[in-house]
Image (cartoon, rainbow, N blue to C red):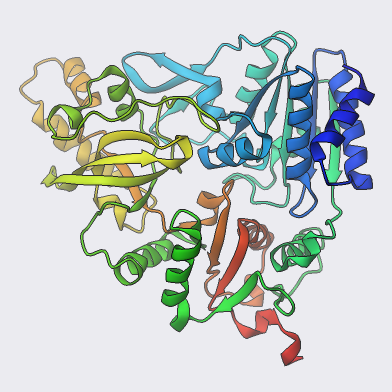
Length: 504
């Protein structure tokens, strides 16, 4: 593969868009990376909102495909993989489901690093700012070393002639517990490979400057690199049709309009806390969607704790929900554009309720059997016992104390089994102990929204004053702004934080 041919194919894929000088330079660096014959080379492409990073990345994928290069596209979440797949025109997969495999049949929550059987393959990861390299003890799963970046690098470079390209926006929120996104830092990548190629896109395209969302996002991003920022950013509204302030007394009517225009799945409320998201979810269901039952058909849910039980049960044809219910068998998970076969349900996965039955209380908790579809995985269908208690709690999922309470109550049910090993085996296969922990997903925190895009985004930053200004807040605000593709609504935004020509 020669650089001139690659450049031509990228230009062809860009179609009607003439590359900027920065994009042209990035194409040149990309060509050097592709033609580097060493075994240990990597590339990072960084770009902020409005710089054409997404378009250029898609053109690179299409050009390499046209030239016969073997590719694997990855992203940290199902929704991010779906967006990447649509932009690149071919299937994308979640990182966890691609690089890990179940360790042993008896332990559903333990995963080893998979064997990379690919040869001469380029792995391209989008939304790489979300890749953590900090081992976090969650108590509910074990993935390889516990450090995702370490494992990703180990997996890719264990393949014959394989290499990695990371794409992301360093201005977005870094992974929880980390101050920077290490996967986008060349100094970090040098720990794994000898040659690291870098390209940065900073110039906002002219057409992007016409968008209030992108214009303001660029202004917010610039504050990240300026230590002298002492006041909260002032959002410019004048002359922009895609950004506006929504007073609280107009929120219900406006949300109903967004649901009609963009759909429920195309609309999201982003908040700064689980507590605030919970308030929104209750209010939206009661006043906008007029849903009185605790859980209804059409409800949007988000998985809030990794779950390995229900996909394993379905794959084995042993789902308790199917065996005792009256529903027809659900469709099996299957790979298709933008998704891959699910080995587990991940924290952050989105689901839509199709049917609910058998609401009951047991072990001090409330449960239901629900048929769910997963829109980010080609509407994969699955039946599961879901935990109703987590729907409206302020905690992210069951607390440690609640989890212990459930454990002890279920184990007490098996007290007549003499051997502890057998009791633990029964516990691991108990449908109530493994109930899917979910929350309503009409409103989420920004970390939960990261990697996804919605046509209409409602942003509630809560109470803010100048003395609460921190780098974390600026990253949060920038990330939240860039989730919107069509319209951004600032909920109850203070007048002191907006600028409008009519008031100046």
